[in-house]
Structure formats: C-alpha cells, structure tokens
Length: 122
Image (cartoon, rainbow, N blue to C red):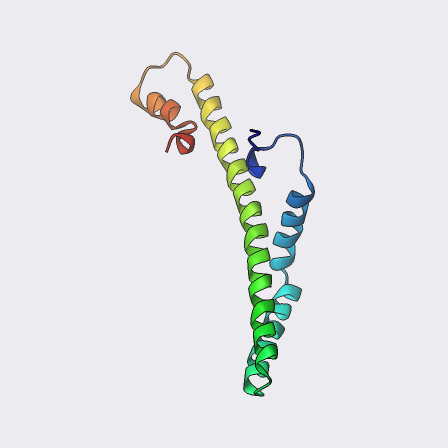
C-alpha cells in the first residue's frame, strides 16, 4: 500500500493542485471575487423572490454549494501549506538559537529544544 504525503509536506515542487490552490487563494481575496459572490447571492435571492420554479431554486442553491466546496478544498490546501512553511521557519529559528548558545545548560534552552517539532508530537 502506497502512502501519499500531505500536499504541504511534499518537497518535490508544486503540482497542479498546489498551483490551482494558490491561484484560488489569490483570486478569492480580490475585489473581483467579492463582486462575483455578491452577484451569486443576489441571483440566489432573486430566484426565490421571483418565485421561479423549484428547479431554478435548486440550481441556484447547488451552484452556491459547489462554489463553496471547491473554495473550501482549495483554500484549506493553501492554508495548510502556509502553516507548514511557517512552522519550518520557526523550527529553523529555534535550531539556530540552540546552535548559537550551544554549551549553555539553562532551562530556556532546554525548553526551546523541546519545542522544536512540538506540533508533530501533539
């Protein structure tokens, strides 16, 4: 059985999904996307307010649900990769501090060493 690493933990470069997630993250924070969302919500209310057939109401709800689920998956991937990168930076800073103060046996250095990769043990 092949075990696939989490997308945030891959070191072989970014794949198509990662690039798509990054693009979605950038797009979803733009004013254009905000206008799109407002138009989508307005269309949803218009379909219900106009009393269009149930099929149109279901379609409007399904479109909103699909957009939400796709964005959730893409944005969660981008968030996880950013979180992983931040943790690696913090670990590098902690390791550099430990190397700089090698030989000192005080409590702060011991706690700093124990904090490295703490998120993986929890």
